[in-house]
Structures are given as structure tokens and as C-alpha cells.
Amino acid sequence: MLISKPDCDVAIIGGGPAGAAIAAYLARAGLDCIVLERETFPRAHVGESLVPSSTRVLAELGILDQVEQNGFPRKYGAAWTSGPAAPTYQVSWEELLGATQGQIRFDERDQPGVTQPYTYHVDRGKFDHLLLNHAHRLGARVYEGAPVRWVDFSEPERVRVTVDLARRSTEVTARMVVDASGRRTLLGTQLGWRIKDPVFDQYALHAWFDGYDRQAWGKEAGTQDFIFIHFLPLTNTWVWQIPITDTTTSIGVVTQKRNFARSRESREGFFWACVGSRPDVLERVRAARQITPLKEEANYSYAMRQLFADRLVLIGDAARFVDPIFSTGVSIALTGARLAGLDILRAAEAGDFRRQRFREFGSMTARGMRNWYRFISLYYRLNVLFTAFRRDARYRLQLLTLLQGDVYEEYEPWVLSEMRRAVEEVEGDRAHVWHRLLGDLTASAFVDAARTVA
Image (cartoon, rainbow, N blue to C red; front, side, top):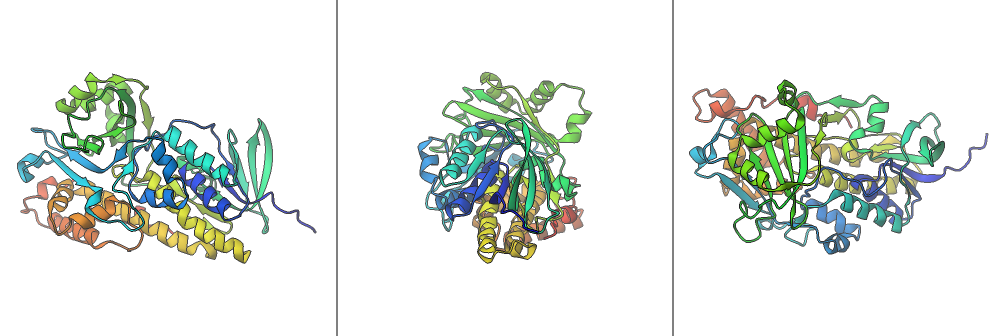
């Protein structure tokens, strides 16, 4: 029986940063790609702050100049604050470390493949649209308002993708599929691969504010456009402060979902109650004008049992998502697209899209996600440890390596091993000065959730 030629080489589900980046990589190399995006761009999206490793991919794709020309705020570093009197989680930085604010600049460490000392904060509506248009200019066929309903892998020579186009159900065939569907995790859900994170169950409420006084926090030259993380005197709860334009700032509260579930307040009431636990933060947010409604993000911590299979890879949020405290979402999406693109091009050259062709992508992606996850977990377990390591010359640059997004080359960077060792020492010694500061996670609580089967 003759089998008709597939409609394309690669069908990509989702046109966000992961989908647009891999479409750009593949189309530029000559593969026939179709991007199926359920929404119509531009569209609003959370995850507005990048880390420097994103710059490497943007430069490779030839779009860095366009990103620069769009005038997105430059992000030269990051800062963390605690109130002058209120404890952060269970610790007062002022009491233990003599400071209520800590900062780190990206230019303290040279980063391979990155030639500028800053990354960006972005309006995701504009940024994602820019990337998707770039993929289209490079040759990818892009369909917006095209939600994918189902993917059929039953035939050995092609994959059938059921999609709504122009309000009619139709079918697209491809040699393989990339799932870049974001937190919808279309194929992770269809194939039963999605695993709820047993440790993190974070919940976020966020909005944009006009006229927020960023200068009040960033008093040194160039620091007002840092990302600021303001810790609240509530367990595992913090506020992000992300510049969007010269006058617009994204403000978001992140907490554990159970904290919101226990509250009898509305979303608005809960947001303002959390911000109000830090009077210095509340004063500045109240003085600004809220210009977008509050949005919520929930149920967003999960893993996948697999990252790839025959004729399939999962990238970006479709593969994994954890707490956003280090702004890793877009970086993971772009790096995943880069790694998957390399394997897919080799598979296409060999005419073989079986799962073994994607092992290098799977191994490096799983390693990077595992390192991010361990870093975040240790951070929450003993927050003051991160602050101490950041202030210690022995560890500062290695810690910066993680914050820059370079987490894929080592199974576990040595600074993470040192942090783990320190946490275990504190856990095992009730007389340790930091023992009372431990969070409610344990150093081994995240092992199973962090293990992604490749």
C-alpha cells in the first residue's frame, strides 16, 4: 500500500518561545515546519524576565538585534530584599547577615557565548510575537487560532495531527511532532506522562502597575531595572518586581496554593493581604496605578515521565515547570529548542526519527531541569544559605553561573553539592544556629519529582 508523503517534516504544537525558536532553527536549516498555535498573537503571558543564557540562543537565531531594537528594559542583575524588621520565612537577614537587601550583577562572570552584560525584561505579548514572526520569515509555516485536539502515532511512517483550522477540524501529517504547547502539556496529558510535583504547589497572582517607584529599591546606577524579589514574612511566599517599560512594572505574589485555599478572601483581598505583610512594599504598590486585572497561575509545578519517544520530543513548559523564582521559564524553553533542534536535524539527515535519535537532547535537558529543581529546592529549604553563599567569595561566581542559566553541562554543579552538604549538616544538628530556620521541605524530598525518565 502506498503511503502519501507527509504534509511537512515537523509539526510543532505551540508558537511560544519554545515552539518559535525550534521552528526558526529547523526552518533555517531547510526543514519544512508547520507551527500550530491555538491563540492569536500578540497575547499576554506571564514569565516576563529572562536570564542571560537566553541571549546565546537569541544571537544564534539572528534575532538579538531585533530584541534590542524593541527597547525592552535591560536586566543587569537581580536583588532580594527582606523587611527591616519582619523575618523572611523564618529568618531576618538584618539580624543574621547584617543586610536587608542582597544583589548580584551578571557582569561579575564572563559567560561563554554571551557578549553583553545584561539580558532583558520583556512584554511577552511583544516578545513572543517577535520570535514567531522571525520563524515565519525563516520559512516556517505558522497557523494561529489553530488548536490541536489529538495526535495519532499509530502509523510508523507519519504522525497524524488533528487540528481546528478556520473553525473546521482537519488533519496535518508530519514525519515527527514537537510538543511546545506550554503548561497545557497537550501530549504529556494525552500520553499520561504528566506527574504532579509532590513538593511544589505554587500559586501566583499578578498584575501590571503604572508609576511604581522602582528607584526606591534600586538606588545605585543601573540597579532600578534589576529583577527584585521581595520576601514576605509568610512561609514560602514572595513578591516579584519586573520592569516592563519605563513606567510599567509587573508585580506578582507567589505562595503555596494551600495558603490561598485556606484564605476566605477574594483573589484581590488575598493579593493585598500578602503584599500588606511587608509595609515597605505595600506603600510603593499602593502609590502606583493598577492597569491590568489580577491574573492567577495555578497547578504549574509538574514533571514528565518522558521527554521524547519515537517521532516526538517535548520542550519548554510542555516538558517541565517549577517555581519561577529564578526566571528560568523562557531560558529553559529556548535552550530546549536549541538542543532538540540539533538532534532533529541529525535525525532528518539520517531519515530516522526513532527515540534513540533524541537521547542527547533528553539527557542534557533532564540534567538542566534537575539542576534548576535542586537549586530551587535547596533555596526554599534553607533560604539564608543562599544569601550566605552569595556573600561568600568562595561560592559567589559559581552561584552566579546558576543564575545566568548555565546548568546543563554538569550532572550537579559543585556549588549545589556544597549547598546540599550544608543543608544536610544543618538538618542533622539541632544545635546548629540555623536549624530553627529550616523550611518544611527536606533535602531529599524532591528526589523523585526531579527524576525525569529519558
